[in-house]
Amino acid sequence: MQDSSVQQARIYTDFSGLNELKAQARTDKKAALAEVARQFESLFLGEMLKSMRKAGDVFSEDNYLNSNESQHYRDMFDNQLSLTLAGQRGGTGLAEALVRQLSRQIPGMSEANGRLSSHKATLADYDRSLPALSEKLPEQVKEVERMAAAEPEMAASVPVKAEAAMLPRSFNSPAEFVRELLPVARRVAAESGIDPRVMIAQAALETGWGKHMIEGEGASPSHNLFGIKADHRWQGESVNIATTEFREGVPMSERASFRAYPDYESSFRDYVSFLESNPRYRDVLASADQPEVFAQKLQDAGYATDPQYGAKIRRIMNGDSLMTSLMTGSMGNAGSPDNPEAEE
Image (cartoon, rainbow, N blue to C red; front, top):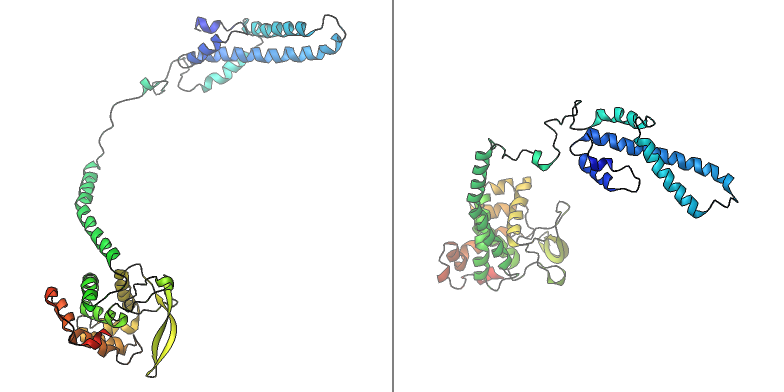
C-alpha cells in the first residue's frame, strides 16, 4: 500500500511526493514502481496534450483571447489534467503495461512482493562478523619473521656502499692504494677464488699505484683499475684516452676507448667477469690460487702487449715490502717500498 505522502503527488506543482517516492523505493519497490509508472503516464499524456495544443495554435491567430497569460493558464490546466487522467482507475493502460513489464526485473524482490534474504538495501543488511582466519596465516607470519631476521644482513651491506662512495679518485701512495682497495679485492676474491694479491698487484701496475687513473672528459673518473678496453661487447660507459701499446716489441702511442665504472668494486667484478667470459683465459683461471703462475699465464694468454707484463706483476707482489706487510695484516708497521721501480 502506498504511503500517504506519495499519494500527495497528485498536483503537478507538488514535488514533496516525488522525494518520498525515492525513499519508498528502498523498502516497497513494487508500490514505488506503480507510482513511477503513473508519473510516466502523466508525462506521456502531457506531451500528447502539448502536441495537440500546438497543432491548434494556427487557428487561434488574431484571436483576442489568445495571449501569453491565457497560454500560461492553459499549460497549467494541461499539466494538471494529464496528472489527473493518469491517476484515474486504469488510466490509459500505459502505467499498468509498464508495471507488468518491469515488475519481473526488480532486484532483490520476490514475486510475492517480499524482499529476498540475499538483497542488501542498507548497510545494516550486511554481515559485520569477522571472516575466518586464513590457513596460510602461520606461513605468512613465518615469512615476516624470516624477513625481519634478514634485515640486519641487508643493513650490513649499507656500509659497503658507503665505503665505495668514500674511496678517492686517485691515490697518493702505494700504502693508501693497498689500504683502500685491499678490502674490496678480498670481497671479490671470496667469490671468484682469484688471489687478492695478484689483483692488487695488477691494478697497481695498470694505474701506477693509483696515481695515473684513466679519466674522461673534465677529469671524470672511470674507476678502471685493469685497463680493460671498451669493445663491441661492452654496453656501459667508456672514456677515450691516449695509451701506449707494444707492436712487435716497440712501444707506440695510440688512442683507445676504455670501460668506465661507477665504483672500484664494479671494476674488480668486471675484471673477473671479463676473464671468465673469454675462453683464452681458461688456463689462467685454473691457476687462480697460484698468483705467480696466474700472472705469467695472464701474459701468455695475451692480456697485455707489454712483453714484461707478467714479470712486472710478480715483482710488485714479491719485491715490495710494503705490499707484503699490508697483505699479511701488519699495516701499522709498514715502511717504504724496497723496490721503488714498482711504483713507476
